[in-house]
Amino acid sequence: MIVEVKQVTVPPGQRVLLKDISWQEFEAILDDLGEHRGSRVAYDNGTLEIMTPLPEHESGK
Image (cartoon, rainbow, N blue to C red; front, side, top):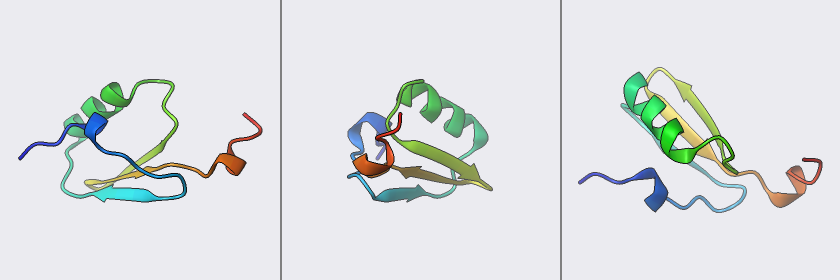
């Protein structure tokens, strides 16, 4: 089963960890999310973390 990034919802203040993600898959996910995404994305040794900050942390932007 393949899940598209647009199908994943991360509630504010929560995170999702995806394991065994290749660098090419990571780049494709970044393209899918776009430049103006509301989530934070981190990648380290095959683990991808997608985190959505709480609204109060975004008030200065």
